[in-house]
Amino acid sequence: MQTSEILHVNDSNPHATIIGDLSDAPHIPENSFDCIILTQTLHLVYDYKAVIRTCFRVLKPGGTLLLTVPGITPIDYGEWESTWYWSFTGRAIEKILAEVFPTNQIKINTYGNTYVAAAFLYGMGLPELKKEMLEIHDPHMQVIITANSVK
Image 1 (cartoon, one colour):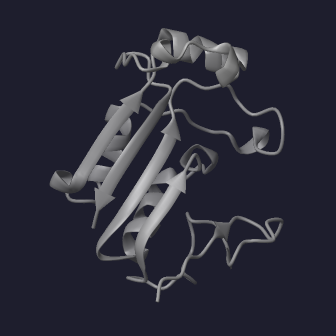
Image 2 (image 1 turned 180 degrees about the vertical axis):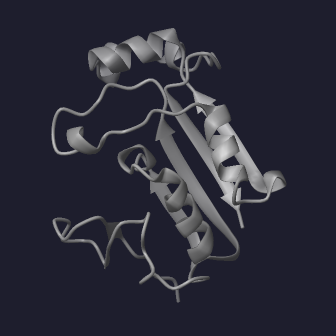
């Protein structure tokens, strides 16, 4: 039987099944998850290395962490403004993950280019953009970084 859990930092999310801060989550049992999907969250936690350690601890052997983080990004004006601490690069995420995960089990990808970065910073939507321009990859304009890491 497959199940899924949703973690949220506080009880404001009615769908959350686990409440807590991933940088300090001793209440989550170790070796309990096959996969953790951690999207656009790491930049909101001051002690992001503790989050990575927690994810590793609670993954089952062979379990996978799927991670996305912002590279080039505006800072949120709303709910997350006061806890928006970081932006990352692909190289930084690779080094951060390698402190815990086996280096041969880490795959990093970056996405973006000058056009995408400018459109994102201006708040442009998909209907305003040229699809062919979105597909160009420039490793020096990292708008989003993805990682796949296996315990």
